[in-house]
Image (cartoon, rainbow, N blue to C red; front, side):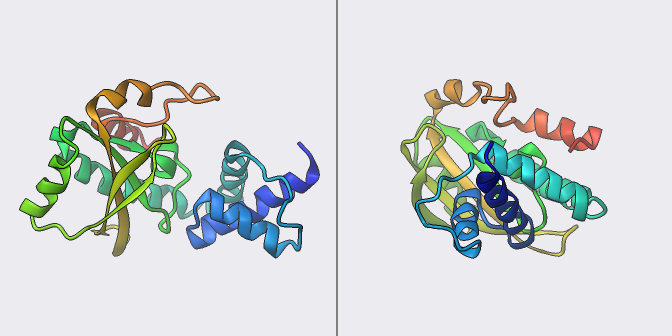
Length: 197
């Protein structure tokens, strides 16, 4: 990997950890901050994730494990609450690179795309609906809400991505590194019980 992409990755990693930015915006801001041309080639997300892991190990090793556990507990609470929609946890909270500034991303696999939204309305949960790009590159509905983490003492963004029930098969294919890209309720519970990062 060339040194320019590595420099972008490490600068972006700092922004991801310290400011809670997502990888895409962090990479673009890193290019700008480093004074590079906007057309500079960007590192891939795996490279940024590795830089995030290095940054956490160097600067956040004393705080990040507890923050990650708190986020996983909050995610598990929402997954249990939404069990009828076959929830899977993804993103930094699943992969172990989350800090208190990270949002929680839960994918729901529904027979009826409006059923999850109706469940939130029936339970008087405030949310914002929007369309985002899903894991298969197609637009999906995201129901975004704010939920208090008792352990962290602050509000955390929780994003419920609504997929068709049949999409679950493609959701479980291993990623380029052979890792499971998301986990169900039992898998998240196991991570918490084992204290896994």
